[in-house]
Length: 254
Length: 344
Image: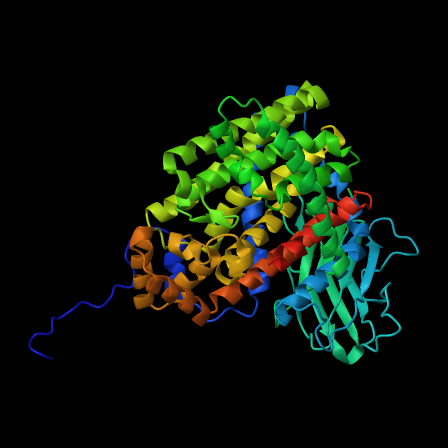
């Protein structure tokens, strides 16, 4: 050390107290990421739902306390579930838009489909199961169900995967799935199925997995007996990349 | 997303923007008692803009079957209030450029700019009051009630962001950012215009919270894309000060990501740079932050989050608008999430 050189303290790691316990524990538990995690898209979706559902919960509580019948309108959250059945009919409308949008995540904004990607396939349902069985209803045991949509004739892509639905429910339940896997997809992750009303519990533990040797995709859903009636939906993601591959919708009849 | 859908969004924005501008000019002409002041009040509104909020209101009302004229006053009110917010935001953020020209306070000083912002906010009440004549007192009051809620949410969000800068808060999580954006941006950019459009289109016959999720996801993707454009935009076309957010120390998703990803020493330097007033920040500081964002992948990370949010918006559109019959206005709404992240 030069005689004139002053001894300096190292730069501190932080410049203010940590008042947020979550941040404090996060910092201790895991080092911050150096590069974007591969599943940033999925992380964004999950984080977004976390924020908006918390906001809805708070807002609905306040709205219930403040609603003024004289001014019209409806108390927040009232009757919304009744309007949700139409969701089951709309997958095909928006899914192709969505997949086009998501294709740009990996292609840096280009509009072209990812090489090797399949055209939209695998839209299926609604499948019905439950208390009032009919000839068209899916059994609760696994059974192959052909997709409704098929690949366009001019595209020599992989054959649409068969879907196997294993639905464990004591009540009448409709299931719709729009799945557009790519050849490289092996495992999927399904976000918890959410109802439009945030106070309703989510349906957790839904499994969607590819069975490549049988060229099918298996879906396993267990509906707890105490699950309130309603329409629940969630996003299916490719486990490896975190990119969306489809949506799953379940309607539990009252 | 097909090119035709992107074109549809552009066409609708142009169509509804023109209609809103024409009616807004009538309100701006108003009762000219002080022509010089009226000119200042009309400055930002006449600079143009996309009229996204007004278009959303008109499109939602039409998608439900209303006549465009039914929602035009409300659309004008949204645009006027938006311009009032812009004038005040520019003062609060110390921004230098707005829609390709110097900000109002740069030209005329802060006291005048604040007064002009107030005048625009007050002027935005007039079309809402006029709604009583066209829509009836009851519906006009419902719209006013919604406007009050939106304004409340927006200033609360702005207050959050300002306090982060004022107290140089750097221990922020991404969900903190999204909560702020929900209030500051999503409410008045997407949620409120859609709620007003639905109120008018159904004559208060629809449950409005159904649009909240869609509005949040589109609005959040919009805000992140807006912040990205501040770093990546074309200087000739952008219309605002490039890197302005870095100069202003705005807590964007990219900055929050960088704060988590950077080393302890870098975080300390970042905190120090963010803690000084804008005038004391140097171009070297700004260039250093920008370079670190590239190094740590903060920009790519934010881009992916925006894509995820836009995807969730499409999902939520199918939930919230499942019962809307097909129409160009419905397709416009449906195409918004994609347009939001594709716009340059």
